Image (cartoon, rainbow, N blue to C red; front, side, top):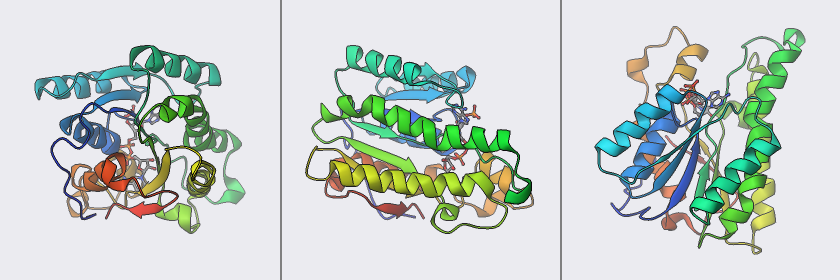
Length: 246
Ligand code: NAP
């Protein structure tokens, strides 16, 4: 696991938005941010799962989170503008965003990859994070040191047979991170980086590798040190880098 021990108050008074916060890695990251003092904006499509995360955060006595139900697979620029307006009115700034929600699509050769799934995967994994980032940049500029974290995958660094639109979307994600990071460098106080979680025990991993023994995989909670590092001030000098969580 990434070697970082976060101080208890690492994210005190920070406002951090997490997409796909209802389950898997996004849930674990959101919980760890709240535990370290952040007010977390929980974005996801499943109200029930988001409510459960909200209740767990409240039960622990951590800062009261905010729930935003939004299906990122068909969200529009107008939806993201409304979200940014809500955050601006409530908090006046945003300290961090974790782009975590993604979909796997189908594990088939590109030759037979269906167009509809391609569109879904590219919209959720690439277009939504682009539009959301664009809407949130003015709020991130209001923070002392804004942090944007994208989520990649090893198949985004080197394409692999049968990973289709997912692999291609993750390569685009790495490039989006680099492009945005380069644009911010020396211009704003925003840093932009990427996390490759590595094999982690979640629903998506089980869908990709149904025959695998989940007990042999890291849990989402075990990989949170890197997620904390990139949101806190210890990573202020990092920009344009792609990190491995394990
Ligand atoms: P997961 O368990 O499937 O969680 C994905 C999260 O995204 C869920 O909360 C899901 O909500 C949400 N989501 C999916 N479609 C959405 C939509 N249309 N609108 C809003 N939210 C949506 O997957 P995970 O393994 O935690 O993956 C998290 C990130 O890590 C992804 O970017 C993935 O590509 C990356 N990753 C994971 C692994 C791994 O081994 N697990 C490895 C490399 C990279 P629902 O629960 O409602 O579906």
